[in-house]
Every structure is written in structure tokens, then in C-alpha cells.
Length: 239
Length: 239
DNA sequence: CGGGTCATTGAACCATATCAAGTCCTGTGG
DNA sequence: CCACAGGACTTGATATGGTTCAATGACCCG
Image (tube, rainbow over all chains, first blue to last red; front, side):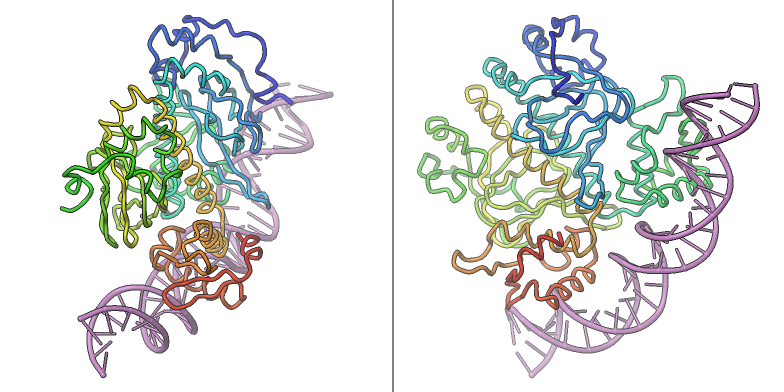
């Protein structure tokens, strides 16, 4: 076992330095806290790292932690009995993982590349909230955002064609500027099979539509899955 | 205009009687409040009724109210430019409508049959929460539940076949026991077109799969869209 | 009874899945 | 630095589930 539970151990160094240096300061659900509350809150956190493909949370496990992604990308997915898989969401830096409501966690969460997460015990959130109820509002905000994204994806899965799905997916990625600051190229973090599982397609259909967009000169792909959107507005129209 | 905004006017009679007689007492997000808080909270509410097909909330409107469904069913949906429609969720008694986070509301909500809703101004929730922060946790719980349902539906839309979708839909309805207490038959509240828009299918495919399930003797349909699930476990297997 | 909406059914078509090669990367060991 | 092995991706041929188009049938309400 080297999932979230077994890795939660030892003391974090806590304190405000940790938060002030945090790459997602201002994005995470903790960002709503004032300086005083943040100091107290940060003492409750532990930072953990995961490598590509590592399982972070599992369906059915006791829902003991929530976390905030500080670095990297995760995929959240569900499985059907026969192995069919649906990726439910991608988590980017600043996104919240887990929830403080359910007794059991209901999804699989897996690191896509190198990932760092700032973790809190659900039970400690409750006691912290006794004096800092605004943390609930903040978590509610993150949950509401996830709901909004999930519902957008419902429209995509239910009513969009394969090409529209691919275009929407690329635009989603481009919003998260995954490349260097200077370059418009960004890395596609998912494999074709994962893209397929995210868009409700097969790997072949994904591949064909990538090729088609390349032929239409709307995108270009470079070594190492680096993508350049050549015609942004055309892609937007398609989506 | 006779949507939610224009109908919010006049004084509710408030007080605990209202809540004690409420058909969704114990289901709604207000149920977490203790007697004292509930009395205060209920004074903020107004009850409004809607008839079949009436628009309750609109995409783009100022997000001024949240509500709790006390009677009836609503459909929450999104539209694409070209008119394609996806129903995002069905709201049943006890379910929350709207949110207290966003500045604008992002969906269309329409009454399916006769509907009653208990309404609160978002701005009043904020001031109420100053002394009763547990209301946030309660709203968070409802939001989390909606997220969970949305994610289940992502799997359905992305990875299930038409027949699996229909079976899942019928089981969803059966969980909400829409019929009389004594009878196992329940009413299908949606038209075929609406079912199609919920499941990401066409009306014809929905119809064909209903027929097929009838031929297989797994379900029966009576006058007025009353449905009987003959073989519950077979339906469960399919889903 | 008659007109409209809603639902069913049939036939043809098509977007996507499935099956099957092949090619291109990428990391590894020599 | 090259050879090679295995996985990832692409492309082609074929199959098929679901859509589309069209006609008919059932039901409800005036």
C-alpha cells in the first residue's frame, strides 16, 4: 500500500511559510482563510507526492482525507463491472480532491505524471470549522465548481459528436496553460486511451479525429505530445 | 414573466407550523437546523407553485434564490446553440434548486407537472449563516449529493448502451416511488422526448427499447404512462 | 367525432465501434 | 550510439448500434 492513507504520517512543518510558498496559494479552498486562520489550518496539513499512474484514492475506501492539488494532474474515474471506464474529471492544481460529507469515497483517483497534494484529515476539518465556519463556504465553492464542470461534461457526453468532443477537450486543456509561459504549445497529459475514456469514445475514434484536425490545419502536434492550437476560433466553433 | 423572481413577493406566514407540516421535512437542506434556528430560517422562506412546463429558473439570470422542492418534479437542462438539449438532472421533493455561490444561474429549470418550491433569497442565507453556520454544511451536503448523481450520469452517458441507459433510468424512477403506497406501479413523469434528452438518445431509440423491454416481459406499461417493473433484478442486471 | 400531440414501427443510412495490420515512438541494454 | 523490444498511435476494412426520415397508430381533449 502506498496510497493516500499509508503516506499520511510524520509531521508537516506547518506554519505560514508553507502556505506563502504554496504554488496554488489563491486557488485552493484554503485561500479563503485569513492569515490567522491559515496559520492554524496549515498546521493540520501534510504534503504528499505521487508518481505517474499511482493510485491516490480508491472507490470504497474510508473517506478520511480531503486534499488540494498543488502540482500536477490527476484523473478521477469510475469503472463498470466489465471494465468499461469513464473518467469523471481531471484535477488540476488548486482543485480539491475528496469530500467531507460521504463515509466512503466513491471514485478512483490516479496521478497523471508527478503530483503533489496537500492533505487534511476530514475529522480535523470539522473541529477547525467550529471556530472558522468560512472553511465550509470555501469547500462549498469548490464543490459547486466541480458540479458545474460535471454538468458541462454531461452535455458533452450526451449531445456532442466525436469531433466536437475532441475540440472541447483541447480547449479545456488550453485553459490550463500546461506549457511554458513563453510558448503557446502545451503538453497533452493523457494518452489516447485516457482521452477516449474521458470523452466516451474509443481510442481509434480519438486518433482519427486528431488526424482530421491536423489535416484541417487547426492543430499541430510535436514530439512528446506537445500540441499547438493553430486556429483557436475554428476549434471553438467546432466545440 | 411569471418565473421565480416575479413570483417572490408578499409575506409568507412563516413560523414552525409551516415547517412541521412540510412534506419534505427531514429531506431538505433546512432539516439540519434545530428548532430555534428553523423558526428563524422559515421566516425567510416563501412557497411558490408552478404548473407543468413552466420555467422556474433560466440560464443567465441573476442567481438570487435557492429553493427546496416540496412537491413535484423538475427538470434541469442545458441547451446547445443548435437546439440540442441535455437534461442534467431531475429534481425530486427534498432536492435543492439553485446555489449560493455563482453570480448567475447556469441552467434552465422547468416544472414537470405541478411543482411547489420553498424559496430563500441567497442574500438572506448569508446573514442567517453568520449565526447559524451549519446551514453551509447542510447546503454542502446537498451539493455533494448532486455532484455524485451528476457523476453517475457521466458514466451512463459516456459508457452505457441504450438499453442499459433505459434500465438505469427506470430504476432511478422506481427509487423515488412515484406511485401510490399500495401499488408497485408508478408514473413515468417524462415524455419520450424528455427521456431521450436525459439519456443522450433519440426519441425513437427510447421507444424501441421500451418495446423491447416489454417484449422481454421485464416491464409493463398501463394507461397514463403507469409502469410496472415485472423483473426488477433482470433490469438491475441490464443496468 | 375530429384534430393534435405523442408514441411506435419500419427502412435506409451513417457515425462510431470493432477487428486487424502496420508504423512510430521511446526507453533499455549492449 | 545503435539495435531492438514493447507499448502507443495510426490507418484501413468491416460491422453495427443508434440516428434519421417517413409513415402509421394510439390517445386525449375539446
